[in-house]
Length: 330
Image 1 (cartoon, one colour):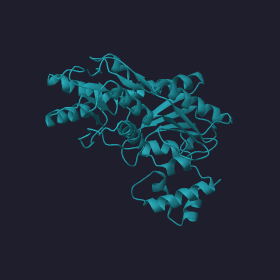
Image 2: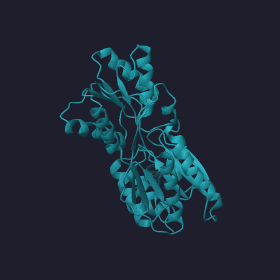
Image 3: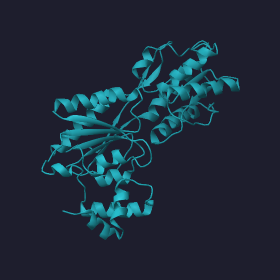
Image 4: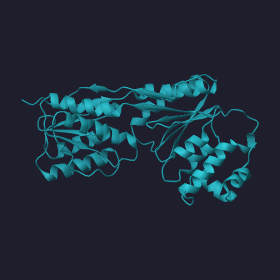
């Protein structure tokens, strides 16, 4: 069995440098990290973090690693994963991957502290994921695609979702449609922006996205950015938000300024979180199957652990959910 010394020798670096690289430490350059990851892959090296219990072949635990556990979007996703893992007699461990080094989350992958992982964290590099995955340790990657033998990618058709939302607004007579987003940290929100832009181009319209995207995709930032848009004056007739949390923040800003939704401006979100149907007005949005995606991810982990063949890519469709926040133009 290969050791960390073997990896260091093959890569031509010190043991401490290998350790830093495997923990995604910023002290190691991307060039050196890539060389170390390739050496680890060739040697089939994987440190077992459960050193005190090496005789166990299974931890009977699956990990879900996300960038931030605080958002309401994750509740249904995690429930789908948990229902499947519990039915198999496994525990589910949720881990937040905040910060560049993400040492705790990285250790779950590189040290095989669990039997498999579901990753929804864009700050964990593809190198770490590819190096960590293997037959005995499958990884399900959400909202990203990675061509690696023991990595399965599950996406949602984000671009089609926002395209359909923009087309619906256009069908309702809207010609001035803005888009409010946060600072994109992965490909998912770039896809949503592309869908919005492609729908407008298709109908010969220009976007009214006059705000430079910044900050988080949360309610507070949706509120702040909407207030900025209001301050600029000359509001569009409709606004699309990158997700429901931002849209709900926007509803609060409009309410404070006495701007009626949908009487004065129509609003549409994305995700269909549980709160979307309870705010007033109830939020029209694009639904993505959160529970089903989580359940599928967990099912695939167990199928791979049992040696069954699975596809390496799955894509879920989205659905337009119409409620009370969009008005037809007369």
